[in-house]
Length: 198
Image 1 (tube, one colour):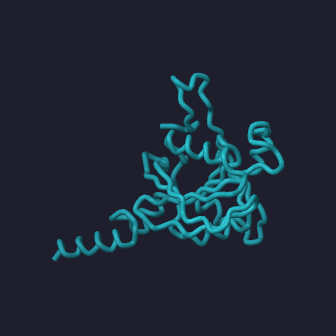
Image 2 (cartoon, one colour):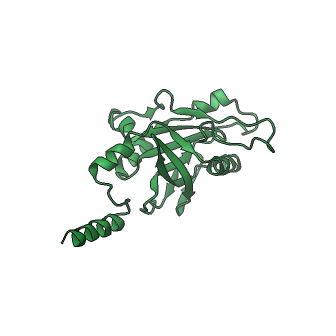
Image 3 (cartoon, rainbow, N blue to C red):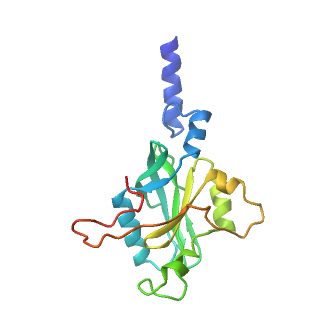
């Protein structure tokens, strides 16, 4: 009888798109990750996407827990319905065992990517009222990420957004959650990677 019960639990977990054993306490543990870390290949590809588009895009992030950190290992691009300078509409991310949240970009306004000031660009790393509502609506998402430069991004955990006022227009990133990657001087020896590469 115990064997049948475990088989049913595993099947229900798989059907729900979450790893087996991810009950309420497991999900709470995921929400309390310390840092968001991008794999080098994901970081490089996101930087490339940011540099090539002057309109907003959205990506579905996939990852896993490594120690106390949430490690982004891959992404998928959903069906983009509308992509403009100040907004993007896309089909929802498909549930999967590795789905952890979403990424979107805030391209700089009125300046080229090559000449834009990184400090000024970092001011574009915020969540708009629409972004906040979208993250709150995606109950299975652990994190939402905004890139405001090829090598600059901010992230918010679910708790960061849950504590925000309902009428907030712009939510800046919490302290320590605005991240700039460092580009190696010799790309042969030190490829472009995220600052928090592990």
